[in-house]
Image 1 (spheres, helix red, strand yellow):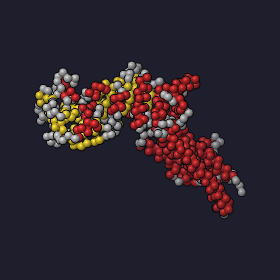
Image 2 (cartoon, chains in turn yellow, green):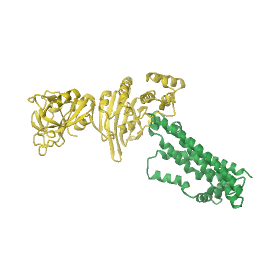
Image 3 (tube, one colour):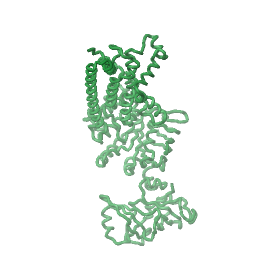
Image 4 (tube, rainbow over the protein chains, first blue to last red):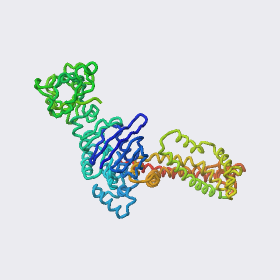
Length: 374
Length: 227
């Protein structure tokens, strides 16, 4: 029971080339706008025809370029939740939900619509028109309209992008609940990293029409397999490295030497071979990078701790409850890629800001990850 | 005064609008969602040609097609359906001149419809034909109505092509614009003035109803946007 996708599509200035298999849970497609997320969904739904490849759901072939199979959208039984919901404005809630049930006998139609109204908490609204509904209600109608057809795949294209933040959190919980009850495959598109993490169990990171990485979300966030995956999962601090000793690297972009976690550390990628000193060109390292997430940098008072360096802030950006600092290590002259970002909650920031320079920033070895260039 | 030009005009305009309606919306449907390209530009150019050419040119071309020497004209005559100097001739002339207006307004209205609506209907099992009737047409209906009204107005004012193909036969093919022309030519200025006032009254009614419909359209657009 799986959705298998392996497709290519060429457009002027853009090439989509993705291949993945989705098991029965919520797969998230995470990527910036223009990375090909929506295009992938449209290909699965049959609204766009790939140039090459294959799309198979369970035993049903949706598309096979070699065999010349291209099932029209209406025969794929795919639920699609559009970004702006695409409710039919000239039909009321009940008519919108029963839109796809034309083939069923009257009685069954009204039974299934009533069931959906109940399940999606829309009972009192069945005679309203879409323009008379709030954004959240519109979303529920759109979801009901798809689910009533019992689709085997549910495709959700940034369902929260049309809503304001307040409404979002509330609806997200409802949606998670609905997806939990749903027994088919669901594919969830978003450019919001945290939303993707909360809703999906597996993630697919897309960039410029290609898959940068995929896997269980926990793994992708703690050990991104390459720099692109690290950036797409929100890691701001990445530096090229050069191997100095068996457990030490020089972070070329930050201008410091870092002790790596011990061999028994939970980071298996540390065991993979590092370029030796001077091995890569003129000792520029190149293939390997080190990273640390901005909230994992810590500020300490003891400069004898490992991986602790004096630094100062280049700029400060304040949010309501937190602060993002741009740091430069003392003695690092014009790091090329290279200021560090640190994330602090306001209370920690209030303490830190009163201390005189230089501050001491620590890269705790267990928080570091090594990754490959991509 | 003979009132037949009023009725002939209204009948001709109504029949011509009806005749232009179906080909107009089908052409609009066909081109509205075709991706841009050379073929599309060419097809569009051909379809709006009657709007760009002088009506006398249309009239002459129609004479070539439907005249006794034209292939179509000869065949139709043999079947007992002559076109030249008949009321169907007046309808054909007005329909051809009117067609581009119907096509263009309908296409504009179709292009206003959010393509996601059509895609949504597709994923819910609708065929192209069915979603045309269930989604596209209802959602663009206000725009199409103004297309119908505009076409009717244009057909009502048709002079050149009608005169060339259908002539000036009182009680048969003499429409109001033609009656005005021949009244002035025959020195009956008062008759021309009466027809002119009637034409103005009809045109005013059309403009008012057009505004009424475009108001309706705005309401609809407001409803459309949703949140």
